[in-house]
Length: 394
Image 1: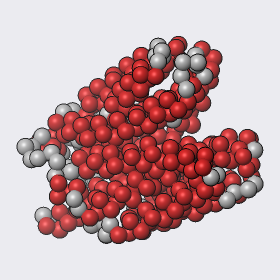
Image 2: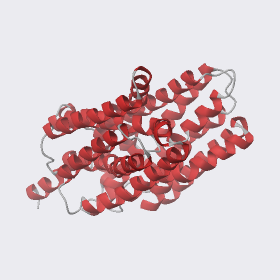
Image 3: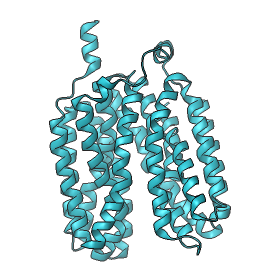
């Protein structure tokens, strides 16, 4: 199960999240497109993915999660196939939005839902760490290969093949390896109950709102910094260091996430989250004032160790507080909030760079992390609902 979800996230992120920059560069090289328009399409893709995630969570509760993922693979793959023949900005925007719709059904919402259902104990964090590493693996393995293919044959030929691989790879793995619930669990009947889908009590709770705002700031700073990392470090440490920083960031995020999955089984999750937010602030601040290769790579390593952990910790926090049965709805709503940061972070940091400098841009991202630290701390303690239920119904 873990291996199957790992591979699905590898494919979805490799041809989706990480490949957006590859597609943008290829389209921007054509005379009929400009960088600003294609960049806006990427932001639109993230926003659509976040909003439609709410609908994906509803489908997960009503239907077999394997068919939800297969449907998402079909929609996302079709968008990639059609994207290769796009001839104007309107078509690019529409197809990026369509891809965001499909990608929401094959990415973090269904993947983390399955892990939370299959791993109720301390091993959940380890399983989630392994599964979410598929996101980074897609960027490390598939994105460089995709860039080479696009460069050699062009997007007109490459994207239809990418779309076919996206659909076939995800659908085969989902139907062959994924199961919504462990055998005999009874979760299918529970999730198809007639209770209201939207539980406003959970969404209005102090922890949901506080952690949601904090993670919007965290991911805005994180994704914004990643998107501008090469441009910034090329100016202060040279092109070789800048390109090497991407690999360093990917490797350290994987190592940090795997270590974090083990640490959380033995360390308070709230405190570990706070420490990672502090680490992100320190890494971003070091990057902001980097002036040579040593300081640039040191900031990248420190920042990288927090990147994977913070992404992994949000699902663990939410399932602890709200439980397995509420998790798809609660996480999809939190995911929609965080999408605002994911879409806005690169834009805000780019505007700050144009008006001031990358030092200001990365320093502000660090300040956002510190604000997130206090907001998350103010959200209150992490009360484990599963332990409470065991105490009430031993």
